Image (cartoon, rainbow, N blue to C red; front, side, top):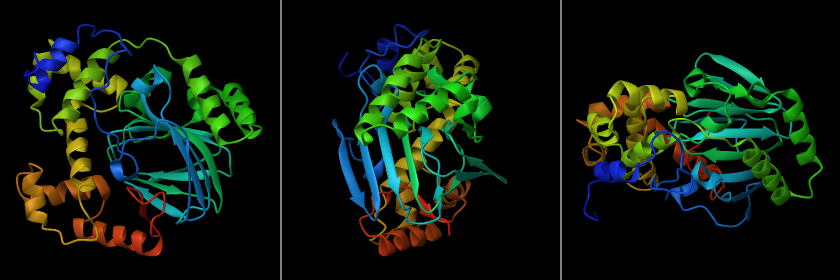
Length: 327
């Protein structure tokens, strides 16, 4: 069984495909966080560029849904930051002045916080001079157990935290965090709230195992093989993904491949775009450039220029990994 393919292993491990089994090993293997490094197993403060950042992995069973809980406070490096899509979701409890998000052609303000399922396009965040929040970086399927609606309804449409959990509950949580002794206690409060709200979600086991195969193959697995390995139709699999992730398996695979390719780029060195596209499995350089524009709104060369600007103007900043200056 050790030499089974990733698709076969998913079928063998997925004996419970109707309900999530949070005690299963996490086979996703990738965390799209700062520098794409493993997250710490205990709180670790960072204070770079006037921003304090504290993060830790939640305890089981939340660690099967969430990559890390974090605390962020300080002056952002830019008033507006562009956040290209990654295979992850986001939950923010806002404790400072309202921030704004531009998604598509619309812009909205968020005073209490927001929930964002896995996006398909870049979002622009507009920050106040001082920002303060507690949040969670969530695996693609991980937000579903905490949502009162299908994830597909929120695709590329961030919603306020009040719309997800209701005004009284959010107000109470924010009040408790505002009087907490410090960041670590705030992370514990969020963890306790998430634990309290955690329940069974039909189909989460199926989606989680399929996401693991997509990640293990870098998004290169044939989509038809996924449904065959799971023993369900491609239509059923796509429906489950839309309900729990917000996008189809094909879209998740595209996002994995694009994100992994871009994270592998060293902005400080020379880049052969043709070789990069070929190594990532794109049909040709034109195909890769098309993906780049669709995911970021930028050409590859413009992306590198903006990334180098961030590194030049804010060397070593805690946020320098994926967000881009939008000013």
